[in-house]
Image (tube, rainbow, N blue to C red; front, top):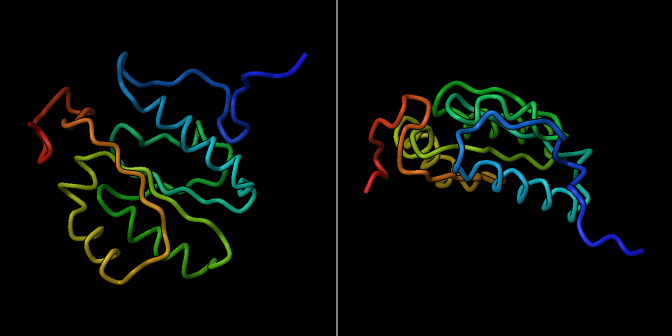
Length: 137
């Protein structure tokens, strides 16, 4: 019998802590599938900041680093420059990336840093029970 569906190896099989209806679970799966398809699990390093994604290290089957709020691009830059052979990504929400970390992401982009930034825009500061964010409609 052919396998039709299986969980990505880069995603740890544990319950997620996110609120019901949140898209972080779907996003995690997509990131993990990309890691699997590219065959980069052993050389991938993720950077997770404060906010809803603060404990991504529990979910991804790769090395993870915690960063201060809004500072994931700066931390990812340091990691990538010290380990240029590794694939480095950040996983940030809109409050973290589009508000507190605006300068960090703009400067990383202007410098052309070789990092991948996953931007989850749920239009609120989720960890503060729905406070408006810069991306709130």
